[in-house]
Length: 137
Image (tube, rainbow, N blue to C red; front, side, top):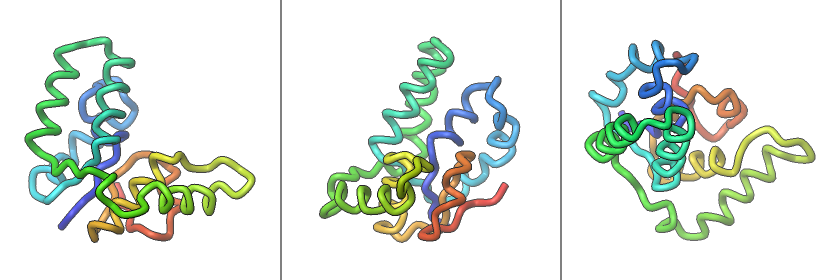
């Protein structure tokens, strides 16, 4: 199976005080036993969030090494008309009301482009997307 793993799952994995930390720890087999993808943008988001929430260089370095060792990091800008596709999805799901982020919409474009089987996320906004299968915890 091929999974796109959202930042919310990975941040929860590394930050023990996150609400979903124990769930993330229980589901590390997703990463250990499958082909898992993130983008450069997700990597940036994870490192930034972890530093902001923990202020701990050691956790940030550990997370960074973990990402490099366990994920296929795709360059989203290799997808033709990437930003246009993300914007189309963003406008579709935020019609006169903000519901999902541009980054979350980009995850859907990436998942579809690479034919990924599931998106793994704790972000409730992903439940709105009809274009993907969301991993159920």
